Length: 437
Ligand code: GLV
Ligand code: MN
Ligand code: MN
Image 1: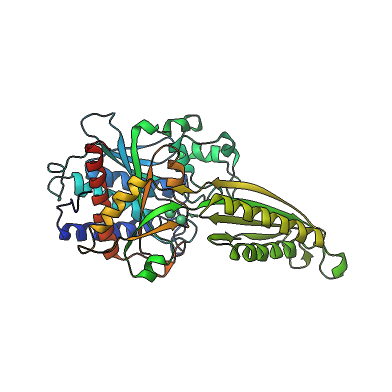
Image 2: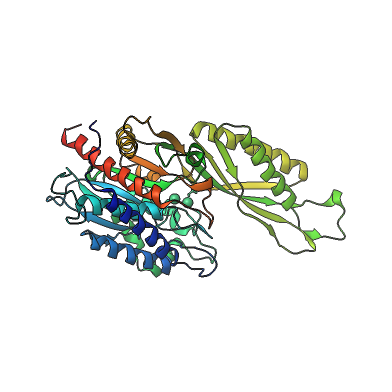
């Protein structure tokens, strides 16, 4: 592949990075919980507000904009032929509860800066000198985290055409169904299929994201090529026992659902720790009826299970299930699990790994070693988009590896080299396409 392609001066990239950081701050103020942390869930008023802001920023760099039928915000720059396939860049704007300000968001804003660098004349735009053989789109996915309805990747699943009718009945914490939430937001559930894109429309999907882990920080490197995205399965588990008086019930008569659930959580840790590249998390645990003087008759826990390889992750789920049978049997409890999310592991396309590697190399001194190539332990929209397009990802160092937490961070200097790497990756892909690969 050719070497460094971009002719943009470093000052412009620094300005772009500073704009990304300032906009991350601006979007962080669009939250349902002002003063308490960031929370921006699917189909909420905050979702509508960030879409409007991002649409303005898209138009500012000459993109045509639309909000699709699943609430994803899309911007596009055509290349003459309005039906030409597009390279899609982007990430998501929704958050977990009490979130940081960069997960997803920084990837959307970096994509906008790449479009600005490549296409906006007078702003370092290279359109005249480096024409791309495809259209460019930026997409801000509406639901990656699954915070509101438990099912993650709703926005990107709609784009991938893998939306399932059974999801309409999913409810949020207030009992609002996904169908009702669509209508309240001004979307028509009957038209969600219109968000779907076909493989012919897309050249590929490239996403920049913070690593959400400590690997790059430990290595002292800014950027990495992503090789694959770990698959995830999520379950809601119900343990049934018997509610009884907390004073009058001797231990031998108790069927305490919370103790069964607690043992289950410890079993998840023990089993997953013994496996390479598998992590299991019980992030929610509730006891019912939830009174200080009642032995819990029911407990509900969530399980998030991830692994680099689907086969080993599924074997771990079987092992956990066997342990739960034993624990609950011993304690006189019953249990059942409902799978609320399943996404297989996805491998990044070799061509996109190559161009991202070229992009990262362009930010390093001549003769530098190849950049790190790591797999993503976190989930990303590319997992759904892989159903219709090649996907590739660029990771940015995430100090201390902390994410899904208000202290989540990324350095402006890493965002700057990230923008350069992403822009270079796009140009390298353009060059590959132009030579007919
Ligand atoms: C999304 O961040 C996930 O991996 O849960
Ligand atoms: Mn996340
Ligand atoms: Mn994310």
